[in-house]
Image (cartoon, rainbow over all chains, first blue to last red; front, top):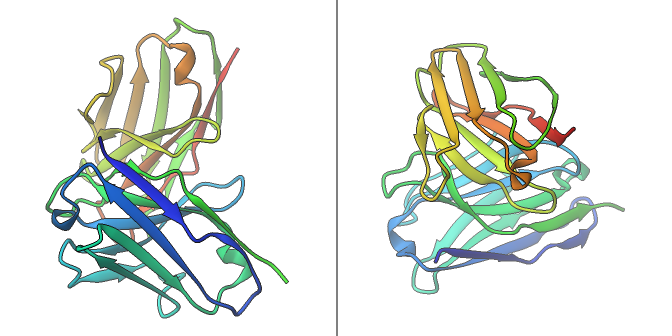
Length: 121
Length: 107
């Protein structure tokens, strides 16, 4: 079955960096676009970024553009999110999510359990 | 940016009852709308995509309808595990956005 396991969360000061990882299994990772979606404490959902199946195309929400970088290693079945210049408003649970189809739909079919990032001084 | 407005904010019902949740878009999203369920402490789960298609493994009691700006998620007979927060999400226009959620609670 599809399994997505995020790691790398924690407490970080404003302006610092952090890298999240998402280990995927149970499907052919290299054929699906992958997303990061976040949820601030007690709030709704916000899409953050997508990377195409081959890693050649990336798109970002305006709120993170220029600060976050999504990447993937298909040989390791792993998705990453490099987060630089973190702000307090980036505090959230970060989920990795698998797209619904092998052609990108921006529908989030399977989700990991999430990893909490707290940005605080 | 398309704003999705979900109503009601909270819906209190008993197991066995029918639930009707609404999602209204500020502009047409055609039928490019999904519904997700999030139970406490869990990740969201895709229920419906393209307004009316059930995702893999989703029970038939969940159904979606609508097009353009008005969409409905119906749960025909509530089970105890159905209580949680429901979000709609559109991919009809960039940036793709979520609604603020409807909390479905046990009465």
